[in-house]
Image 1 (cartoon, rainbow, N blue to C red):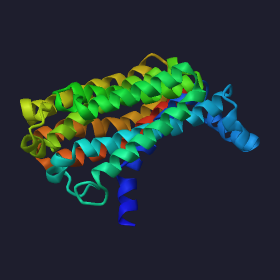
Image 2 (image 1 turned 45 degrees about the horizontal axis):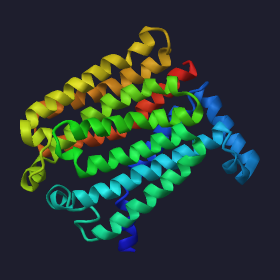
Image 3 (image 1 turned 45 degrees about the vertical axis):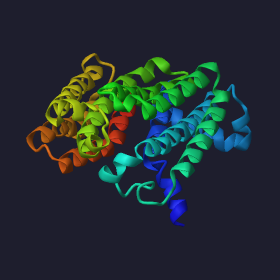
Length: 303
């Protein structure tokens, strides 16, 4: 049971779930999200398992994309823990590999199997969909092996992957142009959050000799860059309402539930620069991700 738990935890299922939700969000933006989601549920319940074999259906393509993206990210998470096993003994000793729940070899096998399954599920989506999935696999591997040990490069890679999830859903749901809206928001959001995570991991990264923004430039500079990205995001989130694309419902969610988190995440690490603060801020930002997605869906719904 301990090994099974480790095999599950090493994939970070919550992150994979959020990734799948992002893909789903990008795919149902072709029309009003609520109606598109209902159509998706009805088409699946009506056609049963045969839906999975009709690649021409955008509903089936979107379902494939959601599962594909979740599996690919889970693979990247498992491989990331393998690459980070040394610094995790200091930064996160509770994680599956340093805690002994799963071995590095086991995590590599899990990552390989999940990545292959993710790519196989991308085939029915079409050439563009498969190319996007393959690009994500390559970028995740590059991040785990090299980019995360280069100041800002790893942060940019994760940010691009965060935005790519919405684009991937847009490809499957034939709504790429609309999916670019949450994709841009996601890039800035993930860039800021990843920098704060760098600040939280600076102790272990320094011992392991890993070069991140925090170990090279210090946590103060790193948090200032993160704050700048999050403040740019805060300004951009009001633009869909300002230009008349989204209504007051969207603005209400942004003002009450998104802005306060972004402001807090920008100011708190600078006022109280401690590892505990950085980890708390990172967690709060993660919890607020679905709220941001809900705001975008509300806006496209016309509220």
